[in-house]
Image (tube, rainbow over all chains, first blue to last red; front, side, top):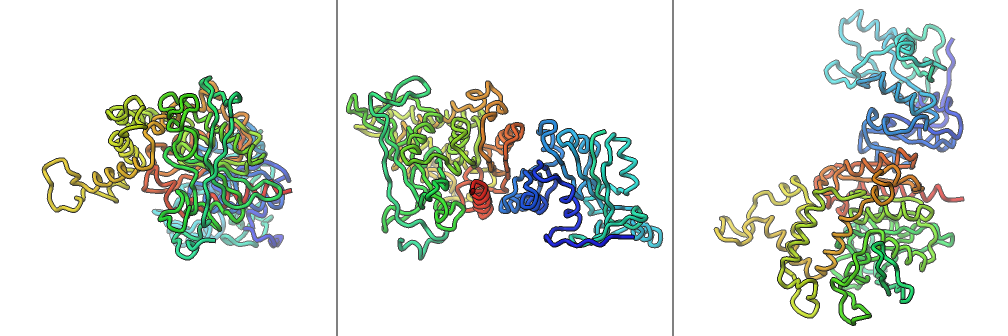
Length: 209
Length: 390
């Protein structure tokens, strides 16, 4: 059974779910925040004090124009400057698959943040499996729309992989939601049955063990 | 409104403006400077644009760099050929919108564009101060600006904004008067000069002092050290550009000739450009002011003065929200220096935004038209002004 949800606040469906997990009035760091939509939403609707980190100058400028506090830089380096526990949440939305040293980053997230939010495209979706099985080519999906030679996504991760990984890196999964949504879409559905096969994104709330 | 509204290519201008003066620290209540000496009376030349709102919460203080003045925007008269030095940024609807904000800029203490400096008459001797002028610091400049803010009855400044040495004053404002500053925008700036920056300043000062006309600073009744000051300005201009901008602007192109002169004329365009900049500068700037201001900038060390050597400690009492901006090709105040201050702000839990703008024009980039910079400043100011509304 899947639960349909719609979004009236004009934010991406996955970001809407992340926003619903954030306690009002908390302090949030968004790693790879893009144009700052999530932070702007959290500021307007949840009175959140937020900071974003983004590499791209044009996106940084868009954040400032939106009134979002933003640092231009590399998430792996910028995260090192913050004191322990200075954020309530550190968010890594749809970026884990591009991170070179994920364990170090996740440890840093839980050092400076009380909780972390990690989301990524699920590589074990049945369409991905079927593409590889039938065509023999590396799968290309709306969530991972690149050829092997031009993809920024250096890692393929499944929902099961991430659960197993939590034991290795020693963090706790506090909450998880598997969803089906189109790229950038404001609507989608939560997948409860066979999520590893049917969901195209996973969103995890993680904490220190 | 002035006729310039019609033809100002960088957008609508603030129109006609007037330089004003505020004199304070009259004896026996002179200002005691950081080096312990007394100075007074002190005059600051300043200009204002826009209107202070009834809540008095829309004041912006702009802090100029080495050779700037209080004339940020607009024109003094209808015959004026050039607007103020940051007219592209300050005006109706511009990055710093004079329809929304009340903008103040004063000429720095020690300068020669209307404020008290070495070329001012010393009331005790009735001669120009020359080298009797005390060594003023960035901190002294800011304390003088504070006196002006008191006079204008501005209790809280929405934003202090400045580039280069103006950026040092921005930082000084934030650490010295944390309760007064809501937000701050240091552009292409640093908490302290690198050896490279000090070195260039020293060569420039030596050029002035080597000019026989300098005469230990006593030249106000005779010939001025124009050659020395021109060379000093030429050195400065090299540091404001970049390898790339000089390649694009001049390359090895020759100036109004097709072959080398095989003498010491200005063969290359870059030589001609520097000579022109040097000659133009001596018409408006005082050599002693150049010595004093560059020395003040070299002495400035926020970490040492406020944090026992630690930038993190230096920012520990600061309350302001920051927008820090650097430029990729700026080799005088490179990005790593902006990033270092950002790091110290982060460690103090301050609200700081940082952007490194891709620009080929070196240190000068902060004064050149940039839609990116205008949009950044406009967005940031809009936000911080919104956040203090009841």
